[in-house]
Length: 370
Image 1 (cartoon, rainbow, N blue to C red):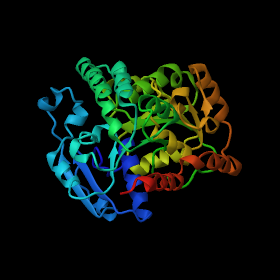
Image 2 (image 1 turned 90 degrees about the vertical axis):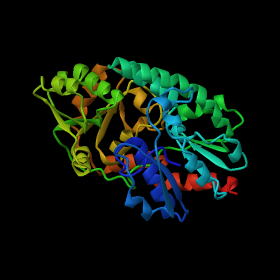
Image 3 (image 1 turned 90 degrees about the horizontal axis):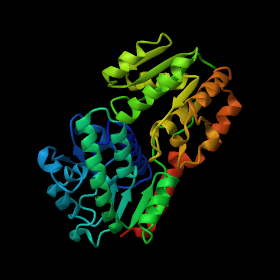
Image 4 (image 1 turned 180 degrees about the vertical axis):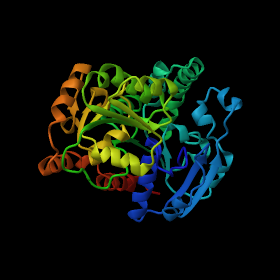
């Protein structure tokens, strides 16, 4: 049960869902996919390659879904048709993220085996988004949604298994649900192997979906405190950058903005950057762009929040201040990435491979199968 159509896999949640589906199929698991269409997330023939059946439902967006004590992101995914389709068989149900869990604790599913796949401690995530949102109405919505998500979260007690993306989140859920079966399992992603290019280049990269407040806040912070203070070429790349960010970048000769580039263009930027700078104001979930740059990029400099709850501290240079970022960039811009560095990265990422994840997922599902 996916909160969105998981293809194209062009944002964090879709990347995790699509590549999980791909690897389950590759492992011989029969998949009946249920997902919600919304905006540009429309039915996709690609999913039929991996799933025995694919069912689509329209999100119920609008004021009626908002005017409810149930979170808008959950209420808008409350299709009765979905409920009836799920009741046509006795298969395991995997709910992707809290947003998809409207029917999880419904009495008609009390006998079913249900798995909750976490992506964030959602109320924390929305609270931090609200703090970094510049638009007043959006900020009010995000604070409201955070409150509702916290209330709704307790319904997860009905799940038979919880799969948690980070060690920090695992501690939280074990504290909230001490009687539930809870396991740490990182996200699936687009990289089936480490594909880092040897060598050296002349630019620093920050990338992300720049329409998301968390990401444009991070880009703005890096520009103000780091990128404007170094003598290296910097590229900021991502989807739909807001006008204020474009205007700020235009003030600096060493910083270039690349908007809405194709997947191939983005991969080229990631593979050839000498240093990747990652910054986040909130230590929630597991950042898919962190995994992406570790599997296919050279040196990575990030703040402690970016690796919170992971086992990846030895794979990055950790910067606790703007001065730490600057110093690390100055050092790493001069260091070629060689064969030994690539092998070391591969060793450090073993726990985060799709191959390890699919084995752990199938092992976790085996004891609760009907």
